[in-house]
Amino acid sequence: MTEHSYPPSSQASPYLIDSHVHIDDASFDVDRGQVLDDAAEAGVRQMVVPGIDAASWPRIAALCERHAALVPAYGLHPLFLAQHRPEHLELLRERLGQGTAVALGEIGLDFYVPELDRDQQQYYFETQLQLALEFDLPVIVHARRAVEEVALALRGMPGLRGVVHSFAGSEQQAERLYEMDFMLGIGGPITYPRAKRLRRLVATMPIEHLLLETDAPDQPNAGHQGARNEPARMLETLQAIAELRGESPEAIAAATTANARRLFGLRTPAPAP
Image 1 (cartoon, rainbow, N blue to C red):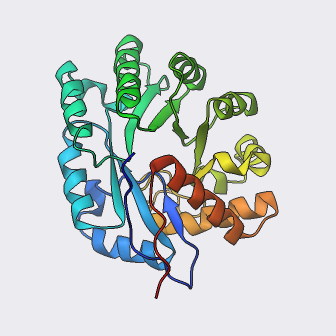
Image 2 (tube, one colour; image 1 turned 90 degrees about the vertical axis):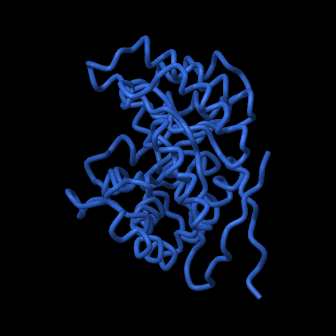
């Protein structure tokens, strides 16, 4: 597996990894540099940037070449089904063959939007899972109203590893994912007191299966409804999880950073001089 280095951390803040951020989104075009500076100041010093369609891959690759804090993932997202073509799967194989991707994603199933053809979604999802096995890459999985179907597909391909991003399933579904060596990506929704089931789950889940994420610019935290989400707000998510678990933010930061490094093959930085 390829290892990817990243900038040394500050002694003044926890070392955090945003395991899912769409920093290539056009909403960041006017101030992306400032957003990345704010993230670093908050301790978010490494970010995984998932692709959503073939058009997004060159943009993400260019950003990751310019910013050492960013690492790429490439995939075909189910919400953008109308933009996908079968030949994009071969382009994806070529892109993965370049060896820069830390994961294959964002891929998955979305049964929340009724007009999305389920058979087509399943085709792209399962074909991309096979590519993940071929390239020995973790997968970043979208599973909205489709956790059972996603788990079934994963179970049918032993050897896969990855994260179900923005997890919103049950404790039983989470346990089945743990058994398959999958992690859960937790972000802004955990900061909402009304998210009782998710908060109960995160309060007691095995820490070795937890990843922090923002999904920025989407899924803003409580108190920021309607605003663009940003990776610096991960500190609020960290604090909420620490309070739910009765642990220190530093302990949660250390564990989730170690989890992200392990899953994505990210090299631990050398100590600051």
